[in-house]
Length: 299
Image 1 (cartoon, rainbow, N blue to C red):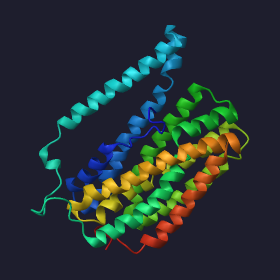
Image 2: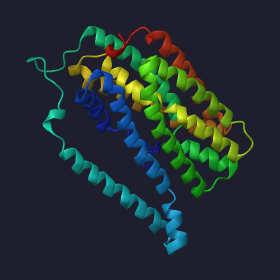
Image 3: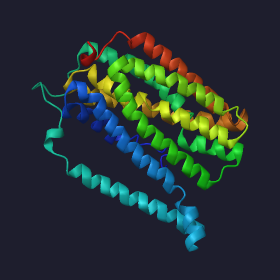
């Protein structure tokens, strides 16, 4: 949670998303992205559980508070170093195909139009997501219900475990109803559940609704990534991934800034309601704009 969101939002994500579609057939692309996100969520779940480490070190081993938190940051640095070593071991086969001898990117006008249109929608979704970051939701549970570190750590461990399960379900569902339909028809119910979290009277009910929401909310992630990589040419994938990721990261930067003011100046649950409402608007606009643009395996 060093970035405040508990998610990988760096440049590595751009390159990894461009690499994955080249590792198999088009029909297996969404499944590959499902596994990719499952691995992220397994790590995310373990990281959420590790949020309880400072309290455990203090209560069990008598470690001072500052030293306990320093040890967790040290673990984070060690894991990032291990990640760098794994990247160094990648084969040259991971490189994108080169189709032109002319230097610089050569982007098809139709691909450019598609990516810019979908990036505009992703901007709405990511700003909404910034209202609903891990740190802000954890703060909501702490302030609204008095949930402690241990309870929040366990809740987010279960939430990320639910996310991991949902990625497999997303790949299965996308084969039957299509990528865009899977994105939209799972995302809207998850947003409605989050709005309900803002109104329930107890932590147990809120946690239950939140976990149900987490079973659905991430089903659009592997499908979204797969869809963007499917509607552009192979040599355009790094560019498309870069543009869409840049837009999403920008939105993620804006959302928490505004959400903090809303929590203090309006009401604690305001970011949850606004963020969920914006996501519903995004879903409806996405379905209207792209339901007829099919990836190759659906044509």
